[in-house]
Image (cartoon, rainbow, N blue to C red; front, side, top):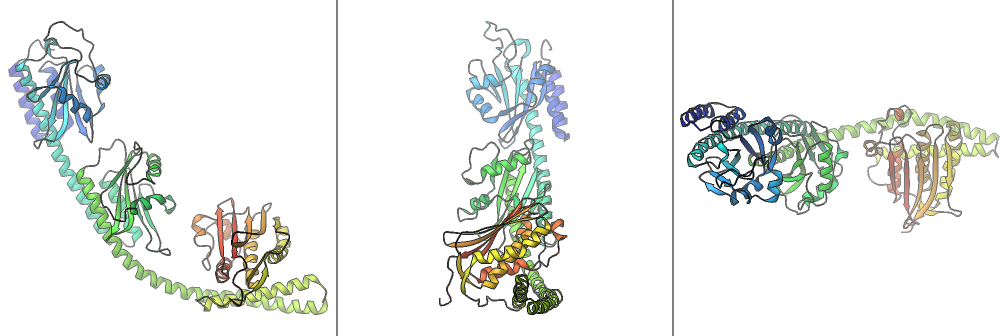
Length: 595
């Protein structure tokens, strides 16, 4: 440490710093030179510069002993804590001096305090004395703070020493102000490029491609850890679109409470809502904030900005952007751009959905024509020919062995299949609900018949088939043939897709206002994607093991149509590899023929 401050040396060093401040774009190097100059030229033992990042002052540059650097470099201090100290300080021009005794206990525990002897001299520097210099921009915005310790000769700086220190402080403030202006310009260019990419995404194709381009552009433009985009379906049959970058988002990732939170007020607000892992609640997202915190931890982020995507006043989706702990807090300009991004996405989505609706209508018309052709071809080639042969031979056997129960079973079930063919023909021609036969039907009898029909097949396949029912009848009103078809299809599918050694349990019962036939198996199970489509005509499972088992993809479609026509419904619960439970529900007694 120099014995005295040489003014000419200080002025020369300041001249060099001024040139560097005005010409260099490396702010970190300039600040390091300023801190070093305070130590080497002005004779302070320690000089430290902190930059404001959001609400925290982060120590970025330290000059002094290595042991001190290791202790305080990178330290994060709440800006409010330092500002409180400024209010307790003596004002020395642009400097703030906090004499020992005024420092709060919390600040004393967090601060670095040198190990110095406490002298009786009133001008001696006390270990708990603090000398700060807040660093402001030309507009008065706080950018950082400089702190110095261990002044020359261990004494409180005099007027001349303070003036020299102020010169170095001014250069540090200019360096941070220049850095801020460069960062703001870079930010405007970066965000402008992001907005251009999103606007161009409107011509990228369908909504799926638009969201993919937008998610990647937003992640790169905002330097985000993760971006999620979700568009809610316009109506129940409409598809839902999701996208994520860099991690892919799937529909199953949805947080149902988030949609309710976003739409609860009834007014679409475009201001981004912030959620952090440190929150203990959220006034705007009361039901979903805990789930959102879990999502943040899953991608190793500490905060998320959520903005509603809207069309007019209608909520159509949301944009969620997660940031890593090391990323600086989102700026006002970035929040503004987030609002503009969702506004632009709302416009792009509205245009794309209009085009998509037109394309979907054309596609659906084509698919309907294809379904009709395939249905008729399947009936003609796969059912009619073998059924004719089965019925003919069954009648011949019935004439020869009139008392044979097996022959009667063959005849009865062949006729049931023949009725099924008729239903299929009706299915391909009729789009509205048809009139159905209504008579008293015992569900126990129908389920028992299905069990008897498939018992031999189950034994052959090594599947244990059980049947449970009340002692008496379980009566409803409906078409016995059609109800039997539904139960047969459910039991047949359960046996078909259960591997050897598995189990199929058929049960009949009732609860409340409904009666039910339940078929539970330990088979392959059904994915959530396939569950959405299993009642569609010709749909086959995406499971490769299931695809290896022959089938037309018509059984469940016909069953659902019959169930609806009979005033009932079919419920399904399933997990891949865990088996499935199909429940065929019907109203108690049902509508009578004269109703």
